[in-house]
Length: 254
Length: 178
Image (cartoon, rainbow over all chains, first blue to last red; front, side, top):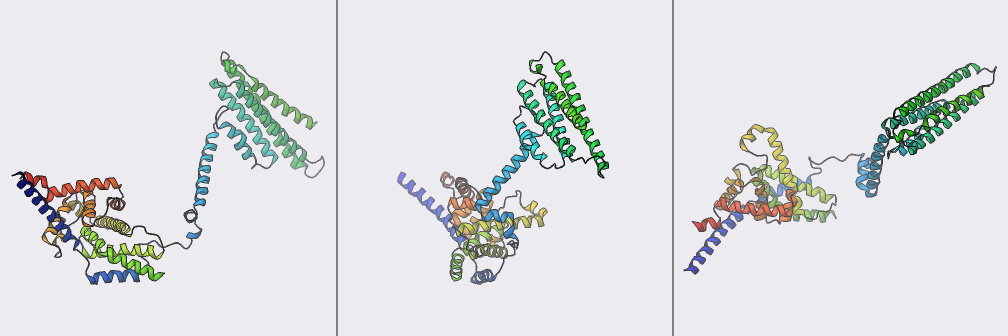
């Protein structure tokens, strides 16, 4: 009885599979006619360019993308350069507002600012730039002092930088002074203008240094209880720098 | 060298021409359109061979190109008569179209019936089932053509086959119950 049932099921299954296979076989019978086959083959073999295919550019040999595609080493170099440029630009941008203690601060004072100064050629502009940098250092000190983050280490860094900016300013002022012609010469009128400019730079520097030193003292007095604000070396150094420049200029005038 | 390329191309065309034509015809339901797509598909192969580009699996290459050309054709058709298509298709999947192929005189009753039921399958199952059982492609090849993994292709084939069996009434379990 059971054997009969199994045989019946197997027969049913076979019948069903046969139906499915017959269907598949019939679908497989769909083919091209021999004329269609010949015509398509002829069209393909006689065609020059597919209407869908992109037309290669005559300049493609020289393009950047083609160079990358053709040379793997070049692509690695290009990608490395791109990462370096993008990363470098980002780091430089981030360093603009950095303060002592920040990871980007050395980048700002050791690379960005000296690099920028290489594009300044006249001693007058160089002096102005050094004066601006000195002011920037004092503003940074004020910001840190206001936040209560100006410790001895940061103050030393800022004082050292302020000293180097003052030296640079002095050097450039010397250069301007050396350029000035002797009394009675034709260029004397022009040299008067230069003198005015130099005076202006020195006056500005002096006033900026004194004003910021005063401000630092005020912040210092306000945060007297704060241990970190205990040092006031930088305002002293600012005043000394201002006097140094003033005295050196007065000596040269005499 | 050139003669060898022509000979090789003609051999591939002879072996795969009808297969690709059938694949196109079943999907676009228009003989002229199917021939156009077939021609473009083989033209791409011919261009690649002429440029001495290496083609590891010409069959998979042809199916992939044809598959993409059919999708492009549907997109163009869709942009031309969007309203008409909105009524015809519920989903943006590229399902088997109209009944023209089922009325093909070359087809027998079983073939016509099976093709109609293939059309009724869920869109993700139609291509894998067709390619596996009608064209005899491996799950890996189907995965490559449809841009899915081999495992995903296997799953779709199995689910599609179960669905096809249910829809055709070729399901053993149901028949046995009856």
